Image (cartoon, rainbow, N blue to C red; front, side):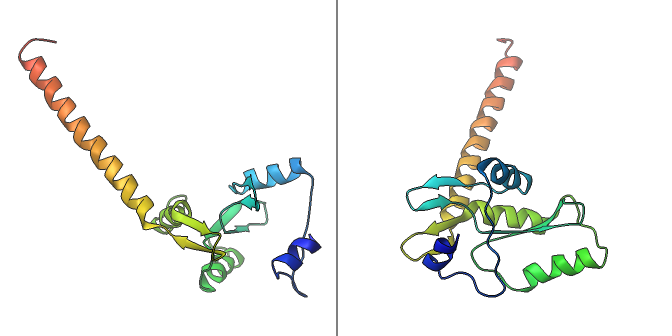
Length: 148
């Protein structure tokens, strides 16, 4: 871990690096919804901060390579002062979309939001909707004509 910290210029007085066996890391990653895969340069993974409540449940997740301080502070304040998080929220949906569409650029060493992913999903969903529409329309025509 010291080698990793030196290589990535990470660390300092307020940093604590921890390591564990593969089984423990897999269980922790699964528990907080963190996904990673080995790659030539180490590991590919999303940039993610997970806020956990006192019972060990995921309270909030913040995604992206950079984010405003309130993105972390507000969930912490809500947790400390007894707030509850809705099971579903538009903000949570937006965070998940950001996670899916965030891509790492090894040339710059930064994450960026890739709009082409959203467009690809939209175009694919539109194509399926149009195909389904025509399929249902033709099925109804066939049923009216007594062919089915």
